[in-house]
Amino acid sequence: QLQASGGGLVQAGGSLRLSCAASGLTFSSYSPGWFRQAPGKEREFVATIRSSGGTYSADSVKGRFTISGDNAKKTVYLQMNSLTPEDSAVYYCAARSAGTRYYSTRGYDYWGQGTQVTVSS
Image 1 (tube, rainbow, N blue to C red):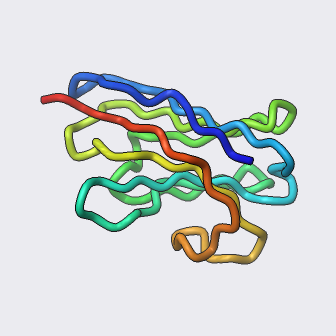
Image 2: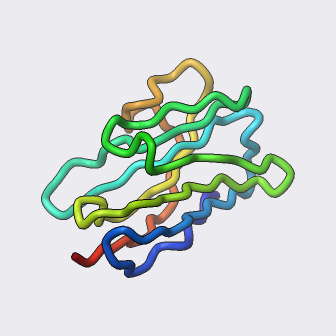
């Protein structure tokens, strides 16, 4: 029900835009978010956007990553700028019901398959 795309290989300092397309659910009912997981590490929160348009981002990506959504297209985006090798991970999009903890994987009901982002130094 969530299809992530847009990952790839980029040099440090470069940019990528990830997309997450939803089917069978709407972002007016579920708030979408992005998580990432590097090898050997736990999945961590990156950013989320509420139906009101409000956003929350992890401190590690503030000022570099921007989450946005297009309700008509049922798609959420993650614009990633000034990428560093530490941003390399599999990026997952997810969707949660209202009132759940946006920063926790446990707060999310639906998950996409992930897209690999690799940043070379």
